[in-house]
Amino acid sequence: MLADALARDLLRIGAVAIRPDDPFTWASGRRSPVYTDNRLALGHPDVRRRIADGFAGVVRDRFPQADAVSATATAGIAPGALLADRLGLPFSYVRSSAKGHGRENRIEGAVGAGQRIVLVEDLVSTGGSVLSAAAALRERGARVVAALAVFTYGFPEAEAAFADAGLPLVTLTHFGALADAARLSGALGPDAQDTLDDWRRDPMAWSERVEGGG
Image 1 (cartoon, rainbow, N blue to C red):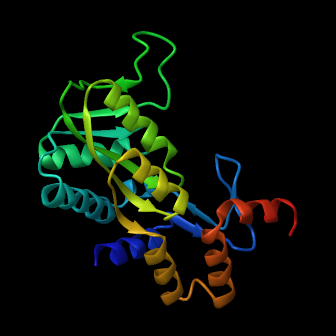
Image 2 (cartoon, one colour):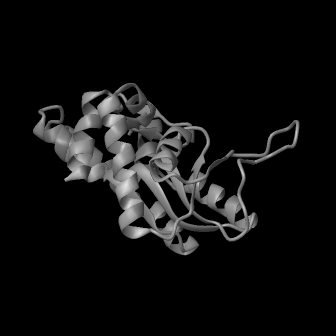
């Protein structure tokens, strides 16, 4: 399965790091035993190709009505551009906020009213960045038919947010496949698996316990 193969790829190239005993700090300030940087896949042609082909297959099979591709800035730009090239479709990307100079664009590239867009992100944690980008595209008059991501942590809050927004989310791999791949490779012992399971059930509470020394 693609999810399992890609999970193994991400571990192999070091795009995913697991440190249950020395948690990372995310940009949001949350503490986490897992850190993912899918941009490292760009330096590995085989993994880059698997991601682009995987996205193209999803669009052709499930969203053939899509006539444009957009991406979140900055990490979604490369896989989004690869996908647009595979499909021969127009491409744009959405900044987290409008530029403070020039045309003060938030959306870079031509996006027209009525366009049916698939929106590409590298990974989904809470879903906030991709949902904000989708809202910006909809304000421009486009129809965002789906969000695609390389990886999701599968947090319940993200699943609820996408459901509330009425936006389908499809990912090429996910936390469960990653944890299985790490365990099978011997990189994850039983105690570490328990820590990851505890974190994924309630990442905010887990982070607060770590911050408090609990």
